[in-house]
Length: 460
Image 1 (cartoon, helix red, strand yellow):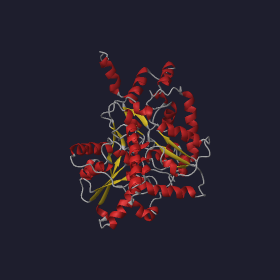
Image 2: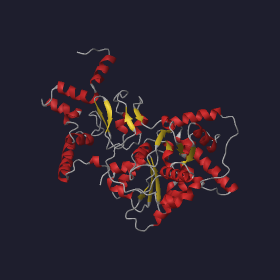
Image 3: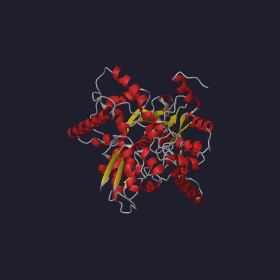
Image 4: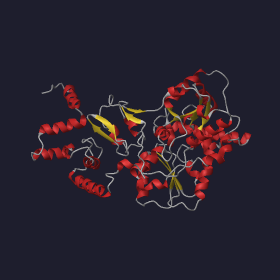
């Protein structure tokens, strides 16, 4: 069985795109090509990691969320706020103050996602205790960009992904159960997640391993941050603060790198950053890593603190969350462990926390027929021997191997390679005019005209 859902939050605005190819060069899954002078995304390859968003010099890469208008609807509106959002603000503002400011922008209730972490810790202990885990390491399912990366680049590892929902999904399920028990009409409940990244937007719209998410809407963290900042500046009343800790202190750091692994017994490693994750997964898939029981992996540097939609500095965010953990520890020592109301529903949530098995992406197959697919693989290898191996990107593909794949998929021709073009011209297999048209097909007709105009030349 294969995953065929290619919903994406990352989109390229061709009206702004200048075809600089920065995004193509950094894409970890080689999901971007340049054609007609603009970047385009190959849907089955994209994992919504947002690396293209980071490097675009003209802001042509957009992240499509539900936006603030999602708040303006009838019903009981609940905001799920991750701890990294609280970490965007200076420590002079308390978590309670920030949560109240979020409520005031249009929500009936605000819940911190990390309340679900105490539940997650129990589930991890149960999973680790099982002796029938076929293959180790178990790979965390927390980061949706990592899950989709494995589907695309490392399909043989999909069976090792932990089939457990992420904390924000558990928190959403808790909200639905607790509000229904309190007499709120389940049909009127609208749950909105404030996201630090694009991948979690997709996880809510098209979740992997489940048919539908418990979350109804997702809003870019930057948008909410701006409104909350204004509210905090306007506040003149007494500072709000917690009287007791309603979660274990280290829960606030669950989305950062290094906390999650502590709760899976055995040898556990924490890896953050897309390049680091891919380098390690390469080793794992080739059998060069053994004896590891659990992998905590985050696509962003410093975990969710480095998410592309986080407005603040990731290192300051980490520092603030570590400070908050220490404050919660002192509060717990002074006032005793508080009550986490989510844990009252632990038994019911345990029955809803599992997901289905994760499968590889289907669209990456060269052909449904195995014999034809093997023939195409051989053709890719053969074509690669004719290409120079410089990976210059002038063909509109990130590597020579990618161009060979595009040729086999009938998305390009070998004449797209500028070095092959020179050989073909020398042998009179391609005229200069034909070469020029190939370049225009990739980089756009206006690209060379713009060059001529900038240097005071006219078209001839």
